[in-house]
Structures are given as structure tokens and as C-alpha cells.
Amino acid sequence: MRTSRHDGSLGGEPGDPMDDMPETLIERVAMMEGILIEHATGRSSDGHVYEHLRREFIADAEVRVLLPDYVRTCRTLDAFWPFIKDRLGRYQERRAFIRESFTPLIDHLEGRNRAPGDAVVGDALASFDADGVHAVWTKALARRTSDPEGAITVARTLLEAVCKHILDGLDIAYAPKDDLPKLYGAVARGLKLAPDQHREEPIRAILGGAMNLVNGLGTLRNRFSDAHADDPPTDERPRVRPSPRHASLAVNAAGAIATFLVETYQERGKG
Image (tube, rainbow, N blue to C red; front, side, top):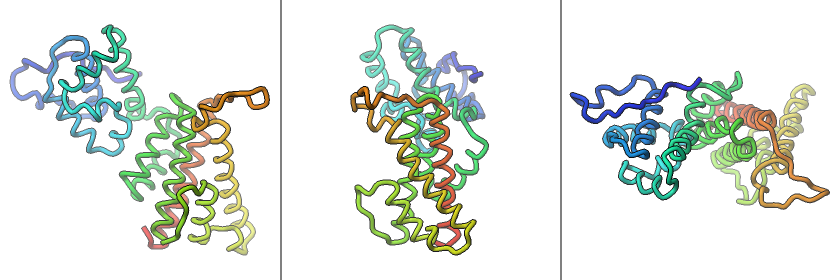
């Protein structure tokens, strides 16, 4: 069940409104959601608190990537008002829109849609590039259930970002249009993870399996993802809609491979 929302105005209370700031991050996110709903439905709301919360959330890489777009662009409640007024006319529609836009972030903070290895993968990627790769991973986690097609695309982007970052660190050139299998192949060879660079059969099998998994992710993405959403379906190629389980497969597989690459790169003293 979602955390209770803040539905009372901070304006007019004695003392500094910041003194009443909730202690937990999820409660502060719910407070911002409540402030925006108040402002969108004609009630008084505290712009200073909104601006304080926004600065805090923008500074947090994990939260920032899941914030509604309008929070990132509207620095004040005065800037938010024309956005919501022009977008939706009815108060009920505005409430529903704001609540829906905060759902991915609140669900993520509540730990929904997480597999057992999510925290491990997230920690590994955060230590690699907190403002880049880890933000992509967080976005993929949040979209697995609410947007399976988008999650599959983000899973692909995650691996591409990791591969390019490592190739840059290894001073290995790549072309802007290189696809994921080609990028991964270059990384694998640069980190000595290509199957033909090893003699032991179990290691060769594992590394070959990782390469097949990357190729499979490319195939899954091409078949399911929103990257080809504009292609019209045909009798020979009907439009296939992925389910959350397909998205979980793609995201978890991408996270496992990305973590393996990051840990190998760091172990070799390049991180």
C-alpha cells in the first residue's frame, strides 16, 4: 500500500515550515505530491517547501531520474500553475495526473518491482558512474511493470552505456552506430572475457553464454521494445506486446551482465 499523502497546507503554521519536514525520503516525496495537488486544485500551498524539496530531489541521482518531467522543469509553483492549467481543466483529472506521474518514484522507494539482485547491481553500477549508468539502471527498474516496452529499451541502453564507458577507459575506439553485440565483443576482448581467450572449458562456456545472452537481449529488444513502435504490424509480423515478465528478464539479464563487466573492469585497476 502506498504511503499516506500529505494533504494539509504548510502555509500559516507557526514557526519555520521546514521544521515540519518528514524524516523519510518517501514521506518527503509524498509531501511534494500533495503540495502540487493542492496548488493544481486551487488551494493554498507553500512554494518555499516545494522549492526546498525540489532542490533536494534534483541533487539525488536516484530520485532525479524518476521525478516527473514537470518537476524537473518547473522550479517554482508559479511555473507549475500554467503547465497544469493548460494541460488539464478538471480538478479530478489534475489529481489523477499528478498521482500517476509520481507512482514510478514512490513504487521504487517502496521497493516494488525489485528482484533479489537489484540492490547488488545498483551498488556496483553506482560505484562505476553514479550520475550515468546507475541512473539508467534505476529507470529500468521502475519501468518493468508500468512500461515493459520502455524497460526493455532502457535495459539495452544500460548495457550500451556500460560498454562505451569501459571502451573509453580502455582507449578502445568504437563507431557511434556500433550495435550492442559489437560493443560487447570489443569490451569482452579488451577485458579478456572472450571465450577464445581462455582454455578452461567451464570458463569458455560461461563467457560464451554471456555473449549469447547479450545477443539475445538485442533480439528481444528488436522484437518487443518501443524502439520500433512506429513500424506498422503486418500479417507476417504482428505487433507483439511484452509482459512485465519479459521486461524483468531483459532488465535482470542486462543488470547481471553490466555488473559482471563493471566488476571485471574495476578488478583490473581501470575503475
